[in-house]
Length: 458
Image (cartoon, rainbow, N blue to C red; front, top):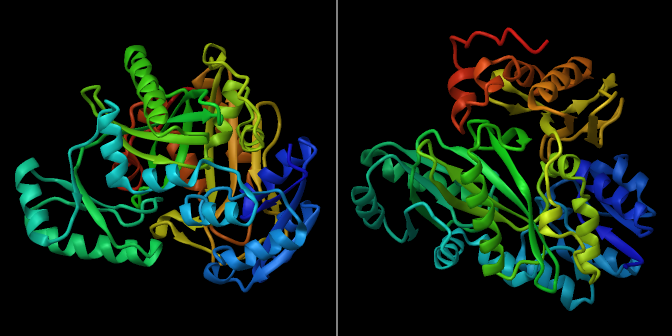
């Protein structure tokens, strides 16, 4: 096991990793920007180093400063969390070249699966269903030919990155030039890579992802699926749950088997997630692979009784995965609500400022992963996630009731949050019945007239 790990991240995921390492008996090193000087992650770690000004390019994306902190602290490994440098193959290589173990998959796997075009090709070779796609778009003429071949609507996507950035829906050929320019420009700004490709757009699909875990000796397992269909118009997730509701057992079995096959195809080691789109006719298609820990990992942990972050550290330290596939069975149901500093009434515009009163829920079956406290500053430079509220119970209905109670207990003053829109989601009858898709939030919650609220469940 490692003696000391540097956490190259901030916010709730940095706190989560520090806690996991402490329970493993591993010392931790935090890095922080000037804006995060009073944040929890430098306070909780054994050591902490300032790596630059608030801007991400000068701090949390400043590779030389992060490596310098690792060298000064004498760490064995670096955990990137999610976002920032977590899916940066070059950063993984730099860590290795300086003698630090990167707590994540091999750089080759990150590079292969980080390029969505090459990832789709590898998945097709592994007999994993993929959405019809174009390959890298080199010209507007090529895009028009593809659109005429498969038909509109289309989805333009960045080959690099994620989080809904560099994505545009094009409903007709006349809108194609503007969509290409917008997607490429946003991808260039977000990932320094403006390359894009096009897929046939599936209308009203569900977003189902499969949690993977593999060691460095070829042992790979899935840890069930999560339904991530409740998404903002920007395609960013707002609420996730596991197991996925109303999922036919035969489709689930086929989906999980395809995910394991996909992970073996890239010799995947550490934690990762295969993301799929499930159409209304029951067919599913590979969308992308996230080669890191996911924001929504806690719901899998509470339902399957496995600590994914600890296993990330153990696998990177060379331990064999001792969990067998037949041992992976769900117990109960869990829901995660993302509490973001955003104003849903203003298009989920991020908000920033000093927090006043902060009251977070507790009680049976409630887990809260957070980095906020009363008086903390919410800076405008970073992702708006404040907390993740997870509820767990025997059944989905009971977990929904528990989440309603948990959100009612939540008070975060000083910034607008997503609590009100989440409370609205949990009262919608189509959500309670498990009939949602990736456009459901926009079409049924954000747009009037609102659907009648559910009458049962408290």
